[in-house]
Length: 479
Ligand code: A5A
Ligand code: ZN
Image (cartoon, rainbow, N blue to C red; front, side, top):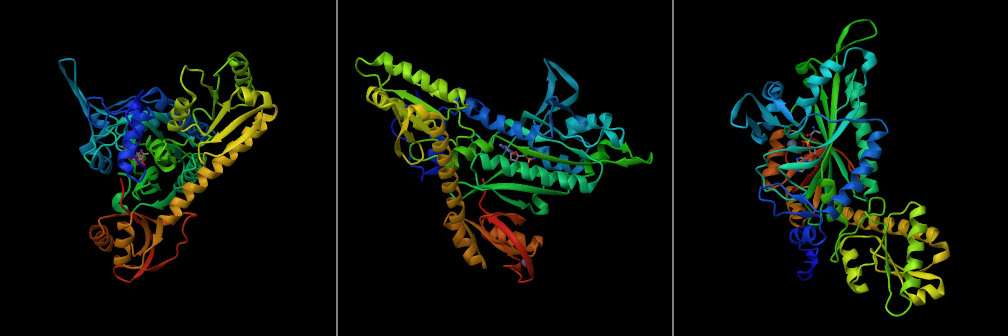
């Protein structure tokens, strides 16, 4: 049991808290002997499972899941010039089969455009084949040179969801970008994670894209974390890979593409945004267990209590809840601690006296509040309490975002906002020269323009460097 090693650091010491909680709550083991590669503990993997099940559910509405190979032949990988430039320093190469040098070097996919698109060239023939909307959830490899961190910056990304739609026109592809953004909003709403959407500056877009829309969240220490990106690829890749279709008039047309990616950073955000000094707090929609029943069986009524607890579990499971009945031979206090650390939103304590009163004591992970729930109407009452917990989790996360997002109208105020551990919206003329000054003198990143967020009101205004007309732009210190 990992948590026996003293108390969890306070969440205000965020980095330390994050590292500690990963092993105490048994999410990731960071002791694997390759830098940037980590091991999912079973509990962490269960957390991942419900989050990714939900993501798949959303995607499956209008995408189809597929699976492409991990290895990409060098000549395919090298075809799209900008894409290579963006990734060449991050690719792992397979050069040998056993002791025999390979005739064609094989790249471990850092992302799958160059694995998938040569096949699209074979799949797409006529306008009737379009649109194609596929996705896969795979591991990808990136030789990251910035500091690696579990769940945040990996060299083997283990949970890379990438969708790769193909469309007949540029406009249709743009509509797809918007549709992926809507999906992302819904996904992060279920996770109760506040997001800010913006269009990355040109120099920071995905290698080979027309434009990149990024999804960021504000972490407890005020740094931003990019937790998803949607790219309009225009016809860059379709020209390179010759993805063409015959339109209704029998003319050959070039296709247009988008792609969209989410990694286990969504789990990093889930843990970081909601957790507290006691451990994880999982929103009911994705919680591994939504409720844990702890029987208090000291004394003679052991069997009665266990029977009642099993009945309660069965009733709740029948109603669709994920419930754990913890019958381990441990003190109740140790179980409380265990499940608090692991973020179960609701604890149901059931002892002989509760049983006689026909009740169970419900304790919210969010507030610690206790309420007696009638066993007879447990399903309705648990439904209600879990809804309240979802609201509390969302409200707290929203408040953090609102209080950490400010407007700045000068370099001075930008610097002081960033130094307070917050994120700023400024006005910027979209000129790279001004952008560089802002980034360098505030040691920050221009995250994007066309800021879309319910957490801050944005307007146009004069660039904080040159005074020319500017657009609302998100600036932060990033992971
Ligand atoms: N093919 C497109 C979708 C793509 O690769 N886009 S991306 O490079 O922006 O990656 C998608 C998302 O994966 C990013 O928004 C980021 O949230 C996540 N990501 C990128 N590199 C990562 C890394 N080294 N570790 C963890 N997550 C990463
Ligand atoms: Zn300017």
